[in-house]
Amino acid sequence: MRPKSTLFRALGTGFLWVWVGLACALVWPGAAEAGHINRIVVDGSINPASADYIMQAIETSERDGASAVLIELDTPGGLVSSSQDIIKAMLNAKVPIIVFVTPRGAWAASAGTFITIAANVAAMTPGSSIGAAHPVGLGGSGGGQGEDEEGKAARDVSMEKAENLLAAYMESIAKERERNVEWAVDAVRNSVAVDAEEALELGVIDLIAEDRQELLAAIDGREVKVAGDPVTLELANAEVRLLEMTILQGIFNFLADPNVAVILMLAGLMGLYIEFNNPGLILPGVVGAVCLVLTGFALQILPFSWVGLMLILVGLGLLMAEMFVTSYGALFAAGIACFLLGGTMVFDAPEVSDLNVDFWSVLLPSVLGLASFGGALVFLVGRSMLREQTAGVDEMVGLVGQASTSLSPEGKIFIRGEYWNVESDQTIEAGEPVEVVAVNGLKLRVRRASQPR
Image (cartoon, rainbow, N blue to C red; front, side, top):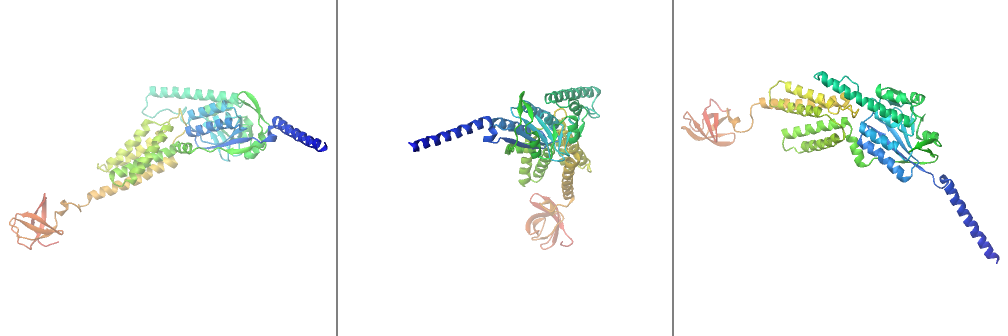
Protein backbone atom coordinates (compact mmCIF):
# COMPACT_ATOMS: atom_id res chain seq x y z
CA MET A 1 0.00 0.00 0.00
CA ARG A 2 2.88 2.37 0.67
CA PRO A 3 3.86 2.64 -3.01
CA LYS A 4 0.30 3.70 -3.88
CA SER A 5 0.19 6.42 -1.22
CA THR A 6 3.52 7.74 -2.47
CA LEU A 7 2.19 7.88 -6.03
CA PHE A 8 -0.98 9.73 -4.99
CA ARG A 9 1.06 12.16 -2.91
CA ALA A 10 3.29 12.93 -5.91
CA LEU A 11 0.32 13.45 -8.22
CA GLY A 12 -1.35 15.72 -5.68
CA THR A 13 1.79 17.82 -5.35
CA GLY A 14 2.05 18.11 -9.15
CA PHE A 15 -1.54 19.28 -9.52
CA LEU A 16 -1.00 21.78 -6.71
CA TRP A 17 1.96 23.36 -8.51
CA VAL A 18 -0.01 23.48 -11.78
CA TRP A 19 -2.85 25.38 -10.07
CA VAL A 20 -0.36 27.73 -8.39
CA GLY A 21 1.22 28.46 -11.79
CA LEU A 22 -2.15 29.14 -13.41
CA ALA A 23 -3.15 31.41 -10.55
CA CYS A 24 0.08 33.39 -10.84
CA ALA A 25 -0.43 33.74 -14.59
CA LEU A 26 -3.95 35.09 -14.09
CA VAL A 27 -3.06 37.44 -11.24
CA TRP A 28 0.30 38.59 -12.68
CA PRO A 29 0.42 38.16 -16.50
CA GLY A 30 3.92 39.61 -16.68
CA ALA A 31 5.19 36.63 -14.75
CA ALA A 32 4.04 34.33 -17.56
CA GLU A 33 4.95 36.42 -20.58
CA ALA A 34 6.39 39.90 -21.00
CA GLY A 35 4.41 42.23 -23.26
CA HIS A 36 5.69 43.97 -26.37
CA ILE A 37 5.72 47.46 -27.89
CA ASN A 38 5.26 48.15 -31.58
CA ARG A 39 7.70 50.81 -32.81
CA ILE A 40 7.47 52.81 -36.04
CA VAL A 41 9.78 55.48 -37.48
CA VAL A 42 8.34 58.51 -39.28
CA ASP A 43 11.23 60.40 -40.84
CA GLY A 44 9.93 62.81 -43.47
CA SER A 45 6.78 64.60 -44.50
CA ILE A 46 3.30 63.79 -43.24
CA ASN A 47 1.44 62.55 -46.31
CA PRO A 48 -1.14 59.86 -47.19
CA ALA A 49 1.56 57.15 -47.22
CA SER A 50 2.97 58.00 -43.77
CA ALA A 51 -0.58 58.47 -42.45
CA ASP A 52 -1.52 54.98 -43.66
CA TYR A 53 1.67 53.65 -42.05
CA ILE A 54 0.79 55.13 -38.64
CA MET A 55 -2.87 54.10 -38.76
CA GLN A 56 -1.95 50.58 -39.84
CA ALA A 57 0.51 50.34 -36.93
CA ILE A 58 -2.24 51.36 -34.49
CA GLU A 59 -4.63 48.76 -35.92
CA THR A 60 -1.93 46.07 -35.78
CA SER A 61 -1.15 46.94 -32.16
CA GLU A 62 -4.80 46.71 -31.19
CA ARG A 63 -5.04 43.26 -32.78
CA ASP A 64 -1.83 41.75 -31.41
CA GLY A 65 -2.27 43.12 -27.89
CA ALA A 66 0.75 45.44 -27.84
CA SER A 67 1.36 47.35 -24.63
CA ALA A 68 1.83 50.58 -26.60
CA VAL A 69 2.71 52.11 -29.97
CA LEU A 70 5.97 54.07 -30.02
CA ILE A 71 6.21 56.65 -32.83
CA GLU A 72 9.75 58.00 -33.32
CA LEU A 73 9.11 61.27 -35.12
CA ASP A 74 11.21 63.66 -37.19
CA THR A 75 9.15 65.71 -39.64
CA PRO A 76 9.09 69.18 -41.22
CA GLY A 77 5.28 69.01 -41.56
CA GLY A 78 2.92 67.90 -44.24
CA LEU A 79 -0.67 67.73 -45.42
CA VAL A 80 -3.45 68.94 -43.13
CA SER A 81 -5.79 66.15 -44.29
CA SER A 82 -3.22 63.44 -43.52
CA SER A 83 -2.54 64.97 -40.09
CA GLN A 84 -6.25 64.91 -39.30
CA ASP A 85 -6.48 61.22 -40.25
CA ILE A 86 -3.54 60.40 -37.97
CA ILE A 87 -4.85 62.40 -35.02
CA LYS A 88 -8.33 60.90 -35.34
CA ALA A 89 -6.78 57.42 -35.20
CA MET A 90 -4.61 58.40 -32.21
CA LEU A 91 -7.44 59.91 -30.17
CA ASN A 92 -9.68 56.88 -30.78
CA ALA A 93 -6.97 54.23 -30.37
CA LYS A 94 -7.49 51.41 -27.88
CA VAL A 95 -3.77 51.22 -27.20
CA PRO A 96 -1.50 53.89 -25.64
CA ILE A 97 0.35 56.09 -28.16
CA ILE A 98 3.84 57.36 -27.32
CA VAL A 99 5.44 59.99 -29.56
CA PHE A 100 9.19 60.48 -29.20
CA VAL A 101 10.80 63.31 -31.18
CA THR A 102 14.21 61.86 -31.93
CA PRO A 103 17.17 61.77 -32.73
CA ARG A 104 19.09 64.86 -31.66
CA GLY A 105 18.42 67.64 -34.12
CA ALA A 106 15.01 66.23 -35.01
CA TRP A 107 11.94 68.45 -35.12
CA ALA A 108 8.20 68.07 -34.87
CA ALA A 109 7.26 71.05 -37.01
CA SER A 110 3.81 72.03 -38.20
CA ALA A 111 1.84 68.78 -38.62
CA GLY A 112 4.38 67.10 -36.32
CA THR A 113 3.33 69.47 -33.53
CA PHE A 114 -0.29 68.34 -33.83
CA ILE A 115 0.75 64.67 -33.73
CA THR A 116 3.06 65.10 -30.73
CA ILE A 117 0.45 66.94 -28.67
CA ALA A 118 -2.16 64.29 -29.54
CA ALA A 119 -0.07 61.48 -28.01
CA ASN A 120 -0.82 59.85 -24.64
CA VAL A 121 2.85 60.38 -23.80
CA ALA A 122 4.88 63.08 -25.58
CA ALA A 123 8.65 63.02 -25.22
CA MET A 124 11.62 64.68 -26.90
CA THR A 125 15.32 64.05 -27.03
CA PRO A 126 17.73 66.87 -26.08
CA GLY A 127 18.55 69.06 -29.07
CA SER A 128 15.17 68.53 -30.78
CA SER A 129 12.49 71.19 -31.34
CA ILE A 130 8.74 71.53 -31.75
CA GLY A 131 6.33 74.17 -33.04
CA ALA A 132 5.83 76.40 -36.10
CA ALA A 133 2.42 74.83 -36.70
CA HIS A 134 1.24 77.74 -38.85
CA PRO A 135 1.06 76.39 -42.46
CA VAL A 136 3.22 78.27 -44.95
CA GLY A 137 1.31 81.08 -46.61
CA LEU A 138 -1.46 81.42 -44.03
CA GLY A 139 -1.79 85.03 -43.07
CA GLY A 140 0.74 86.00 -45.76
CA SER A 141 0.60 88.97 -48.04
CA GLY A 142 -1.89 87.39 -50.37
CA GLY A 143 -1.76 86.96 -54.11
CA GLY A 144 0.51 88.36 -56.75
CA GLN A 145 0.75 91.89 -58.12
CA GLY A 146 -1.93 91.23 -60.70
CA GLU A 147 -4.57 90.30 -58.11
CA ASP A 148 -7.31 92.89 -57.61
CA GLU A 149 -8.57 94.16 -54.25
CA GLU A 150 -11.62 91.89 -54.32
CA GLY A 151 -9.43 88.86 -54.93
CA LYS A 152 -7.09 89.83 -52.11
CA ALA A 153 -10.00 90.30 -49.73
CA ALA A 154 -11.43 86.88 -50.61
CA ARG A 155 -8.02 85.28 -50.13
CA ASP A 156 -7.56 86.97 -46.75
CA VAL A 157 -10.97 85.74 -45.60
CA SER A 158 -10.11 82.20 -46.71
CA MET A 159 -6.77 82.35 -44.88
CA GLU A 160 -8.41 83.66 -41.72
CA LYS A 161 -11.01 80.88 -41.76
CA ALA A 162 -8.32 78.23 -42.22
CA GLU A 163 -6.21 79.69 -39.41
CA ASN A 164 -9.18 79.80 -37.03
CA LEU A 165 -10.11 76.22 -37.82
CA LEU A 166 -6.58 74.95 -37.23
CA ALA A 167 -6.26 76.95 -34.00
CA ALA A 168 -9.56 75.54 -32.69
CA TYR A 169 -8.48 72.04 -33.72
CA MET A 170 -5.18 72.39 -31.89
CA GLU A 171 -6.95 73.76 -28.82
CA SER A 172 -9.28 70.75 -28.66
CA ILE A 173 -6.36 68.32 -28.92
CA ALA A 174 -4.35 70.09 -26.21
CA LYS A 175 -7.37 70.08 -23.87
CA GLU A 176 -7.99 66.39 -24.49
CA ARG A 177 -4.37 65.54 -23.59
CA GLU A 178 -4.17 68.17 -20.80
CA ARG A 179 -1.30 70.08 -22.36
CA ASN A 180 -0.51 73.80 -22.55
CA VAL A 181 -3.49 75.08 -24.56
CA GLU A 182 -2.25 78.68 -24.79
CA TRP A 183 1.11 77.69 -26.27
CA ALA A 184 -0.48 75.17 -28.64
CA VAL A 185 -2.80 77.81 -30.09
CA ASP A 186 0.09 80.28 -30.28
CA ALA A 187 2.08 77.73 -32.29
CA VAL A 188 -0.68 77.83 -34.92
CA ARG A 189 -1.44 81.55 -34.95
CA ASN A 190 2.07 82.95 -34.51
CA SER A 191 4.24 80.01 -35.59
CA VAL A 192 6.18 79.90 -32.30
CA ALA A 193 8.70 77.10 -31.78
CA VAL A 194 10.68 75.91 -28.75
CA ASP A 195 13.40 73.40 -27.96
CA ALA A 196 12.94 70.31 -25.80
CA GLU A 197 13.81 72.00 -22.49
CA GLU A 198 11.39 74.88 -23.09
CA ALA A 199 8.67 72.48 -24.25
CA LEU A 200 8.98 70.52 -20.99
CA GLU A 201 8.95 73.69 -18.90
CA LEU A 202 5.85 74.98 -20.72
CA GLY A 203 3.97 71.72 -20.30
CA VAL A 204 3.91 70.95 -24.01
CA ILE A 205 5.54 67.52 -23.54
CA ASP A 206 5.78 65.08 -20.64
CA LEU A 207 9.49 64.36 -20.43
CA ILE A 208 12.93 64.51 -22.04
CA ALA A 209 14.84 61.27 -22.64
CA GLU A 210 18.26 60.59 -24.09
CA ASP A 211 17.19 57.43 -25.90
CA ARG A 212 14.43 54.85 -26.23
CA GLN A 213 15.56 52.76 -23.25
CA GLU A 214 15.57 55.77 -20.93
CA LEU A 215 12.14 56.82 -22.21
CA LEU A 216 10.50 53.42 -21.61
CA ALA A 217 12.05 53.14 -18.15
CA ALA A 218 10.84 56.62 -17.21
CA ILE A 219 7.20 56.07 -18.21
CA ASP A 220 6.86 52.52 -16.89
CA GLY A 221 3.98 52.51 -14.41
CA ARG A 222 2.60 55.86 -15.64
CA GLU A 223 -1.19 56.10 -15.90
CA VAL A 224 -2.70 57.45 -19.12
CA LYS A 225 -6.21 57.66 -20.53
CA VAL A 226 -6.96 55.39 -23.47
CA ALA A 227 -10.43 55.71 -25.03
CA GLY A 228 -11.53 57.50 -21.85
CA ASP A 229 -10.35 54.78 -19.46
CA PRO A 230 -7.25 54.92 -17.24
CA VAL A 231 -4.50 52.50 -18.28
CA THR A 232 -1.23 51.85 -16.47
CA LEU A 233 1.77 51.49 -18.78
CA GLU A 234 3.60 48.23 -18.10
CA LEU A 235 6.72 48.57 -20.23
CA ALA A 236 9.42 46.99 -18.06
CA ASN A 237 11.21 44.24 -19.99
CA ALA A 238 8.77 44.71 -22.90
CA GLU A 239 10.00 43.56 -26.30
CA VAL A 240 10.27 46.38 -28.86
CA ARG A 241 9.13 45.26 -32.34
CA LEU A 242 9.79 47.42 -35.38
CA LEU A 243 6.93 47.70 -37.85
CA GLU A 244 8.27 48.79 -41.22
CA MET A 245 6.50 50.39 -44.16
CA THR A 246 5.23 48.11 -46.88
CA ILE A 247 6.87 48.41 -50.30
CA LEU A 248 3.94 50.43 -51.69
CA GLN A 249 3.90 52.72 -48.65
CA GLY A 250 7.62 53.31 -49.10
CA ILE A 251 7.22 54.13 -52.80
CA PHE A 252 4.34 56.53 -52.23
CA ASN A 253 6.11 58.11 -49.27
CA PHE A 254 9.10 58.78 -51.56
CA LEU A 255 6.89 60.25 -54.30
CA ALA A 256 5.02 62.46 -51.82
CA ASP A 257 8.03 64.78 -51.54
CA PRO A 258 7.44 67.91 -53.71
CA ASN A 259 11.18 68.10 -54.42
CA VAL A 260 11.16 64.56 -55.82
CA ALA A 261 8.01 65.28 -57.84
CA VAL A 262 9.54 68.37 -59.49
CA ILE A 263 12.78 66.56 -60.35
CA LEU A 264 10.82 63.66 -61.87
CA MET A 265 8.68 66.10 -63.86
CA LEU A 266 11.67 67.97 -65.29
CA ALA A 267 13.47 64.69 -66.05
CA GLY A 268 10.38 63.34 -67.81
CA LEU A 269 9.91 66.44 -69.93
CA MET A 270 13.58 66.51 -70.87
CA GLY A 271 13.53 62.80 -71.81
CA LEU A 272 10.58 63.30 -74.17
CA TYR A 273 12.14 66.50 -75.52
CA ILE A 274 15.30 64.59 -76.47
CA GLU A 275 13.30 61.72 -77.99
CA PHE A 276 11.15 64.05 -80.12
CA ASN A 277 14.22 65.81 -81.48
CA ASN A 278 16.11 62.55 -82.03
CA PRO A 279 13.55 59.88 -82.96
CA GLY A 280 14.77 56.33 -82.54
CA LEU A 281 16.99 56.79 -79.47
CA ILE A 282 14.26 55.00 -77.43
CA LEU A 283 16.05 55.18 -74.05
CA PRO A 284 15.39 58.91 -73.38
CA GLY A 285 11.76 58.43 -74.38
CA VAL A 286 11.28 55.41 -72.12
CA VAL A 287 12.99 57.10 -69.16
CA GLY A 288 10.97 60.27 -69.74
CA ALA A 289 7.70 58.35 -69.92
CA VAL A 290 8.47 56.46 -66.70
CA CYS A 291 9.36 59.70 -64.90
CA LEU A 292 6.12 61.33 -66.03
CA VAL A 293 4.08 58.31 -64.90
CA LEU A 294 5.71 58.55 -61.45
CA THR A 295 5.02 62.29 -61.50
CA GLY A 296 1.36 61.47 -62.16
CA PHE A 297 1.29 59.32 -59.02
CA ALA A 298 2.91 62.15 -57.05
CA LEU A 299 0.28 64.60 -58.30
CA GLN A 300 -2.41 62.21 -57.08
CA ILE A 301 -0.87 62.33 -53.59
CA LEU A 302 0.11 66.00 -53.35
CA PRO A 303 -2.20 68.98 -53.83
CA PHE A 304 -0.95 70.98 -56.79
CA SER A 305 -1.71 74.16 -58.70
CA TRP A 306 -2.80 73.93 -62.34
CA VAL A 307 -1.30 77.39 -62.90
CA GLY A 308 2.14 76.22 -61.82
CA LEU A 309 1.87 73.07 -63.92
CA MET A 310 0.83 75.03 -67.01
CA LEU A 311 3.74 77.44 -66.55
CA ILE A 312 6.16 74.49 -66.57
CA LEU A 313 4.62 73.15 -69.80
CA VAL A 314 4.75 76.63 -71.36
CA GLY A 315 8.43 76.80 -70.39
CA LEU A 316 9.09 73.55 -72.24
CA GLY A 317 7.25 74.88 -75.30
CA LEU A 318 9.36 78.04 -75.32
CA LEU A 319 12.58 75.99 -75.16
CA MET A 320 11.46 73.99 -78.17
CA ALA A 321 10.40 77.13 -80.05
CA GLU A 322 13.89 78.59 -79.60
CA MET A 323 15.24 75.88 -81.92
CA PHE A 324 13.05 77.01 -84.82
CA VAL A 325 12.56 80.75 -84.23
CA THR A 326 15.38 83.30 -84.35
CA SER A 327 14.78 85.17 -81.08
CA TYR A 328 18.42 85.64 -80.07
CA GLY A 329 17.80 83.80 -76.77
CA ALA A 330 14.63 85.65 -75.73
CA LEU A 331 12.38 82.60 -75.98
CA PHE A 332 14.95 80.49 -74.18
CA ALA A 333 15.20 82.97 -71.29
CA ALA A 334 11.41 83.20 -71.07
CA GLY A 335 11.18 79.40 -70.94
CA ILE A 336 13.64 79.18 -68.05
CA ALA A 337 11.73 81.92 -66.20
CA CYS A 338 8.50 79.94 -66.65
CA PHE A 339 10.18 76.84 -65.26
CA LEU A 340 11.34 78.70 -62.15
CA LEU A 341 8.02 80.45 -61.57
CA GLY A 342 5.97 77.32 -62.23
CA GLY A 343 8.18 75.24 -59.95
CA THR A 344 7.62 77.60 -57.03
CA MET A 345 3.85 77.59 -57.59
CA VAL A 346 3.08 74.00 -58.58
CA PHE A 347 2.81 72.71 -54.97
CA ASP A 348 1.91 76.03 -53.34
CA ALA A 349 -1.35 75.10 -51.58
CA PRO A 350 -1.01 76.61 -48.08
CA GLU A 351 -4.62 75.96 -47.05
CA VAL A 352 -4.10 72.18 -47.15
CA SER A 353 -0.34 71.72 -46.88
CA ASP A 354 2.88 73.39 -45.79
CA LEU A 355 5.01 71.37 -48.18
CA ASN A 356 6.72 73.16 -51.03
CA VAL A 357 9.71 72.88 -53.32
CA ASP A 358 13.08 73.93 -51.95
CA PHE A 359 14.02 76.76 -54.33
CA TRP A 360 17.76 77.05 -53.67
CA SER A 361 18.78 73.41 -53.16
CA VAL A 362 16.41 71.66 -55.60
CA LEU A 363 14.49 73.86 -58.02
CA LEU A 364 17.24 76.29 -59.05
CA PRO A 365 19.96 73.63 -59.62
CA SER A 366 17.50 71.43 -61.55
CA VAL A 367 16.36 74.25 -63.82
CA LEU A 368 19.94 75.46 -64.35
CA GLY A 369 20.94 71.92 -65.34
CA LEU A 370 17.99 71.79 -67.73
CA ALA A 371 18.92 75.22 -69.09
CA SER A 372 22.54 74.18 -69.64
CA PHE A 373 21.52 71.07 -71.54
CA GLY A 374 18.84 72.89 -73.53
CA GLY A 375 21.19 75.76 -74.31
CA ALA A 376 23.88 73.38 -75.58
CA LEU A 377 21.31 71.61 -77.74
CA VAL A 378 19.99 74.87 -79.19
CA PHE A 379 23.57 76.03 -79.90
CA LEU A 380 24.52 72.80 -81.66
CA VAL A 381 21.34 72.74 -83.75
CA GLY A 382 21.76 76.41 -84.69
CA ARG A 383 25.38 75.91 -85.68
CA SER A 384 24.49 72.91 -87.82
CA MET A 385 21.90 74.97 -89.68
CA LEU A 386 24.56 77.56 -90.59
CA ARG A 387 26.91 74.96 -92.11
CA GLU A 388 27.01 74.20 -95.79
CA GLN A 389 25.09 71.12 -96.76
CA THR A 390 27.28 68.01 -96.79
CA ALA A 391 24.72 65.35 -97.64
CA GLY A 392 21.98 64.90 -100.20
CA VAL A 393 21.72 65.90 -103.87
CA ASP A 394 21.73 69.67 -103.40
CA GLU A 395 25.22 69.65 -101.92
CA MET A 396 26.56 68.70 -105.42
CA VAL A 397 26.10 72.29 -106.58
CA GLY A 398 29.58 73.74 -107.00
CA LEU A 399 31.37 70.38 -107.29
CA VAL A 400 33.63 69.68 -110.30
CA GLY A 401 33.59 66.44 -112.28
CA GLN A 402 34.72 65.17 -115.68
CA ALA A 403 32.73 64.80 -118.90
CA SER A 404 32.51 61.11 -119.83
CA THR A 405 30.93 61.86 -123.21
CA SER A 406 30.70 64.86 -125.43
CA LEU A 407 28.06 67.30 -124.11
CA SER A 408 26.18 68.81 -127.06
CA PRO A 409 24.19 69.81 -125.11
CA GLU A 410 23.40 66.55 -123.22
CA GLY A 411 25.60 63.68 -122.15
CA LYS A 412 27.15 62.00 -119.10
CA ILE A 413 29.73 63.07 -116.53
CA PHE A 414 31.59 61.28 -113.76
CA ILE A 415 31.40 63.05 -110.39
CA ARG A 416 31.67 61.97 -106.76
CA GLY A 417 32.16 58.34 -107.82
CA GLU A 418 28.97 58.27 -109.88
CA TYR A 419 27.83 58.76 -113.52
CA TRP A 420 25.13 61.41 -114.00
CA ASN A 421 23.04 62.57 -116.96
CA VAL A 422 23.69 66.23 -117.58
CA GLU A 423 22.83 69.09 -119.88
CA SER A 424 24.87 72.13 -120.74
CA ASP A 425 24.47 75.40 -122.64
CA GLN A 426 27.97 74.88 -124.01
CA THR A 427 29.53 72.20 -126.15
CA ILE A 428 32.03 70.33 -123.97
CA GLU A 429 34.32 67.61 -125.20
CA ALA A 430 34.81 64.32 -123.37
CA GLY A 431 37.49 64.49 -120.68
CA GLU A 432 37.04 68.21 -119.98
CA PRO A 433 36.32 69.37 -116.38
CA VAL A 434 32.73 70.49 -115.70
CA GLU A 435 31.15 72.30 -112.73
CA VAL A 436 27.62 71.58 -111.45
CA VAL A 437 25.47 74.71 -111.37
CA ALA A 438 22.02 73.23 -110.64
CA VAL A 439 20.13 70.01 -109.89
CA ASN A 440 16.93 69.35 -111.83
CA GLY A 441 15.48 66.13 -110.51
CA LEU A 442 17.80 63.33 -111.68
CA LYS A 443 19.63 65.52 -114.19
CA LEU A 444 22.43 67.99 -113.51
CA ARG A 445 23.07 71.29 -115.27
CA VAL A 446 26.76 71.94 -115.79
CA ARG A 447 29.22 74.36 -117.35
CA ARG A 448 32.85 74.20 -118.34
CA ALA A 449 35.13 74.45 -115.30
CA SER A 450 38.47 76.16 -115.40
CA GLN A 451 40.14 73.29 -113.51
CA PRO A 452 39.07 70.22 -111.61
CA ARG A 453 38.80 70.43 -107.79
